[in-house]
Image (cartoon, rainbow, N blue to C red; front, top):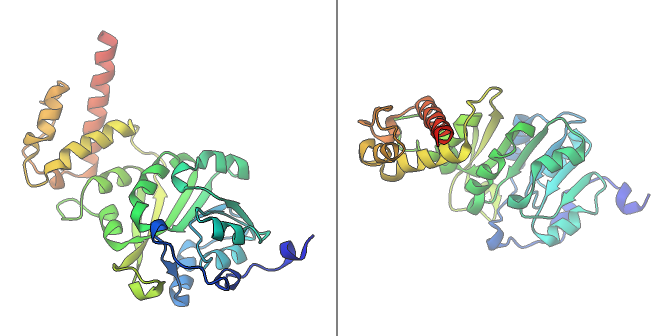
Length: 279
């Protein structure tokens, strides 16, 4: 075994290169030791668990995770960082845009029943990443992400609040979620201009069986004009599908609970299937 492969993983090895954060990758590197310890405590990694970290950056979370897990798979787009990360035998590095990663293939390659996913997500593409991961809920045990606080607020929002919207409905359909902690800008280098937060996402064991595209379209139409009653938006959409009498559209989108949206999507889906059979 080479000396490179045998030495203990140290995050300072990456810092020594004085990597400059790249704006196009949305890089903000976590640097607060107390916050790092709190995040790792919340994740609670156990020896032998299969975990994938998205965007390890300068390895602030990577090092304590590896120490507890023994091995870790990381997804890193920045080729300079990916090259440095490959120097460590405890890490399996996937150099790729996370939006192009098939997590089912990753799970199979790692020989795991399910994988745990963590990461300090690039804020400029955090929502697309969340929707990308929706496709792979079946192979994921849980997710812990650092995100812009505003995004986390939207994810966990309840009905009749300003933050409640499409993201709330789509993610609460498949996950039980809670905001773990708030992280101030000064915890990063360079500091972002916004507060951050860590969210825990646990896939629901028995989600309502739905066509994701249909639900997404339904909710997008509903929230397209939040200030107006749903009869102006979703009502017309339902009429076009011959389902106009099946839902109370004398409400605003933000007043409708997640379960009501899911039930409506089921009805529309069933109506579409019956319509296709008659045709």
